[in-house]
Length: 111
Image (tube, rainbow, N blue to C red; front, side, top):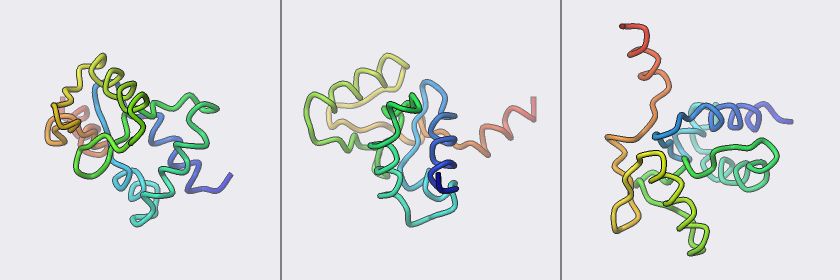
């Protein structure tokens, strides 16, 4: 497995319940700032095998990107079960629900 793919899997696996990350955010943390589409590929091909919380990954606008209605509904329901509010436009407030690994770790160390 390529290092980028491995890193993407690790990052997605570490997104805690009740939080989301964007494709681009994950790509940047994995070392490829322009690799958002590669993150989509990893999610599509590796989610089941690695039991990734695929529903916690959304686009940079905070939107559910899945076009297929049944899968989009599954993602929304999974997020809402974790306490993530998805509005009527299928958007998540990134200022409230975005997971920032470095920032979250800093908060933990302060306490």
